[in-house]
Length: 137
Image (cartoon, rainbow, N blue to C red; front, side):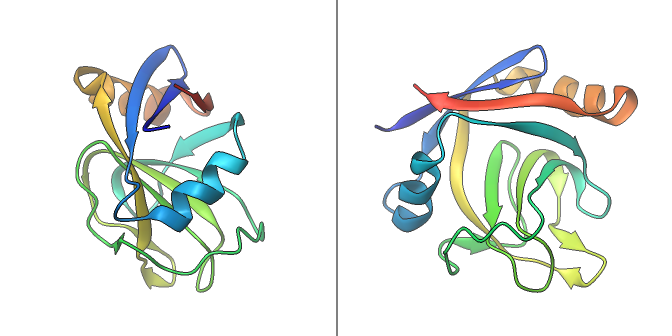
């Protein structure tokens, strides 16, 4: 499997799994499919939304990790300094928490629906939490 479908609020996205750069993160996330949760706006990371996962242990270390995701990059932070979370950058972003900068595993890149990223982020910012579902694509 190379792609996942993402239904985020009323928006549909298609994302490429970064299998070469983050194989362990991709494999672990595929085990969780379909992954359903709520996405809320980030507090410290700029134009990004996130799925807080608390103390959920994904059993991963760092791979292909970055503090500066590009628009459409999706990161999985495996926990440590802050809680486990998924960060979905819809614009300019610098991944951080109240503890400071964080580096998350870049494991998905949006390849379809990019034209709706900003509108999606603004929806979450102004209207609050939205459902998000990652499924096999």
